[in-house]
Image (cartoon, rainbow, N blue to C red):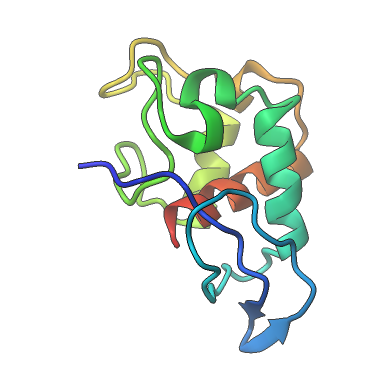
Length: 136
């Protein structure tokens, strides 16, 4: 079962046990901010940039929908259900880079980089965003 995709990027994010103040505020709507520990090497700025790329040049929203809620073309990324990896940040980076040539539930394969002209740094940011919406 999929869960609601509305989420909020916390105002305080713990990185290595230390709070990072001044992180981005609400990105979506109806939940209170929560504390979230990001994976090692991931910053709040990466999550924010990843959201911009997801909705922009990365064109991820085209198949995965606004806020990664899923569409008839591709599954939700805003839940804890992972069909092709364990959902870890490292696995998400690899999956975005390599694509999903034979999807288990989707109508079409995901090309490497989603077919978008994105570089490794942008892939890392998109993976940070996707990780954040699926691990709240």
